[in-house]
Length: 296
Length: 296
Image 1: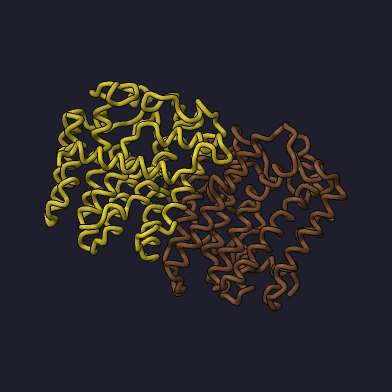
Image 2: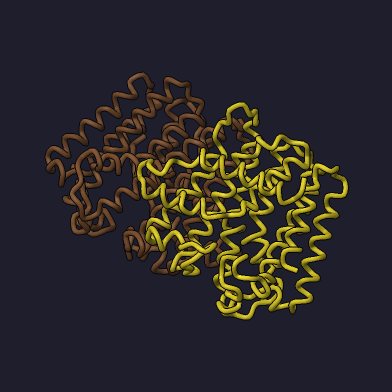
């Protein structure tokens, strides 16, 4: 199957499942649930859920097994976007071409919608799943991985250092610290959760973790490159907005050409990590290439 | 043992465990972890952890089994206070006589400290516990109960309706909706988690749930009464601040005497729910009485 239709198929599955799992618009308190749905269905590409599904598939697991966890991961990603966009944080009015949550629903409700989404994610991760025999011990480990990657030494920690670094000259290790946490941690958690739920043994788990670490950093470098050379319609945000905001980026630190080269090396590392996997890992391989190629 | 020394003993256990579980002040990012510790050690009474420990004990469970979950519950409670105090929400400068988190660390870091604490709670709930054989399936159920009670149809939902109701005339059902969620939900989750971790059967679980629902509402009515008649030193906030802010309260809706009577009835319901328990449930019984008596 072509990658594009694979991505589309996964995305549709996730969107349908999210629609099922999220409380309806008219559930009390209505404005809270409307705000949640407004942000959850704002045109996300569902990168993390797709990576979780592809990782599960790579180890021979049933894709249906990971759908709830994949939705939970998207909820965590979305809560982080809602909070990042707040006036007290990045103060963004638009995301993916639409008004941000707090512009539509107000700051207080946006804070609470984010809180609710993060909580909902763990409710979903711990829910009994019809027809899926996921042992409690596996659920526990998946929850632990996801919470660790999303927390103060993962995504939230990355966001803090990113914020503290704004407008300051930072070095490459600090930039890598930020990105391995702010973006990389959830990507790692997605792949690891998919591996565990798919029944990976330790060796496959470790290989997939290596894949995720390389692909996650490549993804961020590619994003930085796109911020410079990309076109606005593709990104849904202003080209050059990171630079304008005084955010350090890989191209700014390394130069555009070296940044591209580094992204290419990381892509190769990601693909190499899957050397012992059969063709069921092809979607993961193609995703690693796609991540980079879109920015070249 | 006297109730006061029981409460004190539990509180010290929780404080020591929190100190152990929370990342140290000098863990990167340092200001984030400092903000987290600033709010976690701000003189909280540890009501929810103590209820969890007492519920575990009431069904004959080892108290040590619930300490991690009890700490997680206090993290969730604390995150909700940090976010509630934000300028976009209640805009409170002081809590328990100290500057609120955002006054010391800024709004952005306060948002992120809250996010991190909520996440940390689930990391702790899903952590393997040394020497404690808690089956994965029990962990999963405990996490599910806590997430449900803390989420959009629990605590966060209650906060939203509370916010929407400010300065408006609301009726008794709406006020009960707010309080059974905003305060009651975490109290219910604490008692239910303690019961499950202590090995409760369904009958004991149901009885303890009834206890928690009655005690939780009594606790809130007593708080409303204290806001009117209490002394400031005891509360650490301004007496009459709810009224000044236009918040609906039970005494405002029912009159002070009827509110006191209702609180007394709920205390009796809580105690009656424990009729089939032996003296190991005495701390729970005494807590229900203490909750009310402090406001009389």
